[in-house]
Structure formats: structure tokens, C-alpha cells
Image 1 (spheres, rainbow, N blue to C red):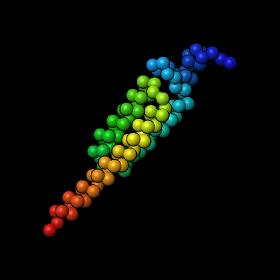
Image 2 (cartoon, one colour):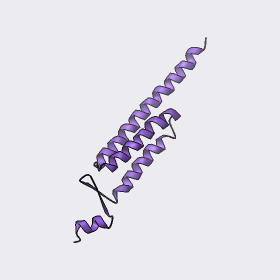
Image 3 (cartoon, rainbow, N blue to C red):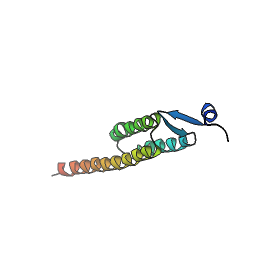
Image 4 (cartoon, rainbow, N blue to C red):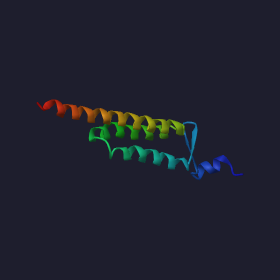
Amino acid sequence: MESFSRALQEGRIRKSTGRFWHKSSTLDIRRSINIVDALSLFVPPRLAEEEIGDAIERVRDLVRLGRPRWHVWLKVATTVFWVCLNSLREITSAVRGRASAKP
């Protein structure tokens, strides 16, 4: 069995604020960022720039701080929920605005 410090030196494990992320977990991080980023294709531009951009920054901060993976996935899930809700709100307000402008 190889030593922990050797694995850390070879880059297979990365240390950040006392918690450890295996290199294989970077796939989960990339996947979570891609999910949130892909959501920007289906929402109004304002939401894509503000909320999704902030969520991607927050995911990167969570990883940099060494937070557990479930924190990252919780952020992804809450972002998807709030972006969908706000998209629906914007669409309904746009439809109502157009409908009320007609005599």
C-alpha cells in the first residue's frame, strides 16, 4: 500500500483546507458545471448571465474551499430549481404584458 503523502505529491489527491478531493472527483465537478452551463441555452439571457454565472462561480469556490461533493450538487440542484422558476416567472409576465396591452 502506497503512502498518502506520495499520492498527494503525485497529484492523485489534492489537499484544500483540510479536506481531500480525489482526482476522479474532478469529473463530477466538470459535469456539474456543464449541467448548469447547459441550462443557459434554455433561459432568458438575463438569467443566464446573472444567476447561472454566479452559480458557476460558487461551484468553483466550493471546490476551491474543499467542500464536500454534496455541497456542489446541492448548489446545482438549487440553481436549476430557481432558474426554472424565474424563467417561468419572466415568461408569464411577458405574456401577461402583451395580453394586457391589447384592447
